[in-house]
Amino acid sequence: TREPRHILEMYGCTPGHASFANNCLLARRLIEHGVRFINVYHKGWDHHGTDPTQGLITSNLEQICRETDQPCGALIKDLKERGLLEDTLVVWGGEFGRTPMGQSPAPNNPDVFLGRDHHPNAFSIWMAGGGVKGGQMIGATDELGFHVIEDRVHVHDLQATVLHLLGLDHTKLTFKYQGRQFRLTDVSGEVVKKALA
Image (cartoon, rainbow, N blue to C red; front, side, top):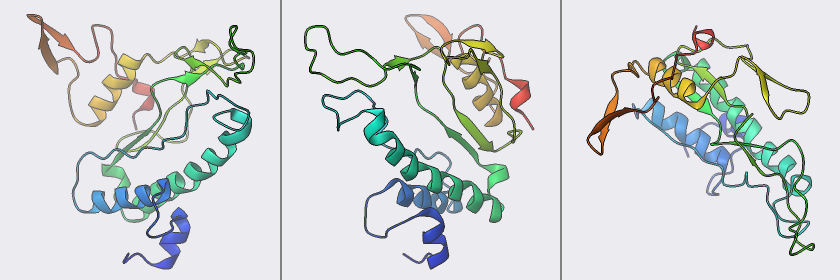
């Protein structure tokens, strides 16, 4: 790599090894070369497990957070220092959250250890750069983290907001399916104005 040592250390990169850190650095380099859409994935967020050492929150969540926190922070800092963040929208999240409580063992197999189940009703994402108003939190859950109780943002609202930040009018972005026009944001998606700079 042609990256200086301090950049590799900032991201936590190990040249020649497959890692989330290396992929975040690669994302920055692709942005510098004009690539317009980049996905960076981390494979390890599934917290269902079949034994106490596999896929449980107590066994791997801390490690996964270590693997993602430093590189994500480095990517934002690096983009900002290079003047690229204001024109780059970073969206970090998954397709659902996890229940605030652990799952009980499978009824037909009490030896199966389970983690936390899929939970679409309350979860978090974060966005940075590209027209986003930083330093704020939108929405709140109940004391358990089970239900949204304030400023609920539906996935259609999130999609409308991301499309808006990309310069697209979500109400005009349609696709035809079974003879009918559909919108990605359905009929109820609204841009979350609080999220905009």
